[in-house]
Image 1 (cartoon, helix red, strand yellow):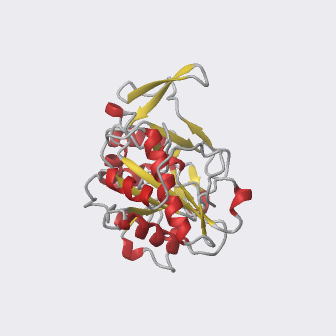
Image 2 (cartoon, one colour; image 1 turned 90 degrees about the vertical axis):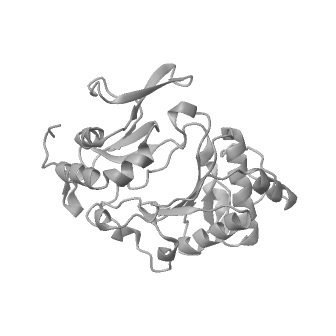
Length: 300
């Protein structure tokens, strides 16, 4: 597939062109494609580069190639059918580069069972310098470990960290969001001066947010190995837990450096069942109950 305007600068400060983005996607395809497989995709496009206007795109343009698979979803809010991209191969990734797709945000469920996610995600979003996000990640990992759950960790590509827990595809979105909230509450209760589950900024103070809300229908985060809208052309990069230290520098992981890294997620934990963990949370006073992210929680 031929790229139009291959020399267009998408990340001017980092010197990354459209051709450079395509080359990056091809270099990490063996790791990126499994993270996207059969997952409806939302794009962040930057037709004038990351310093210009950017926009989210769910609905594929009519000009998209017929070879690109679609997943169609009727949306009540907009009263129309949205046609999401499904990315299968390097040609699809190259087309995305041609569309100036500088971020890739897949669902946490796959199209054959779109109502059953296979990943839980926690987004650690720092409000200030304390606690360090790396400390918060280890605290959340400890809480999950006490529940018998193994977590993967990656950079957000910006200031935060993302933790993923593989789960069996047997739980609906309401249960999973309530479960994530219960885990986050249990962790925040151990460190109430530093961590919070409150989604409203006015309720957080200087505490670091454990964002538990990503288990809802069609929720997304930047994919592992997705570039990010950051001047340094950073990448949301899978990490080994040994790398999650106080001197971790997310800006060191870029489209220039990440292809040379080994994949610390090459051996992922098996998907978990959650019944025992849910029972332990309930016994500890944190029953999994779904709640809208717009509402205040019962624990700060």
